[in-house]
Length: 72
Image (cartoon, rainbow, N blue to C red):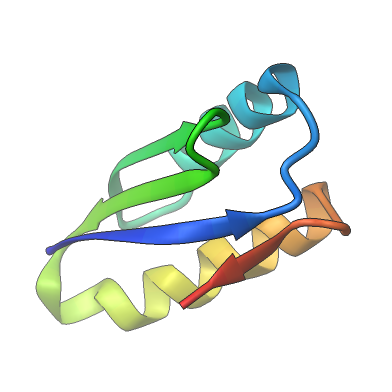
């Protein structure tokens, strides 16, 4: 499954790249792309694990970028 999420308050392109690199290391993530200009996260993961992967992604975003919020 592939789904896009709005990111609120990603501060810079460098932060977006670091976040993308970390998100791609999460178990179950097939692909994660963070676009700083559009403030969008595009996530691809297996359908049966998608909800759990999204929770892991949200937790990592909150840890790495406390001011950033993933809008579902």
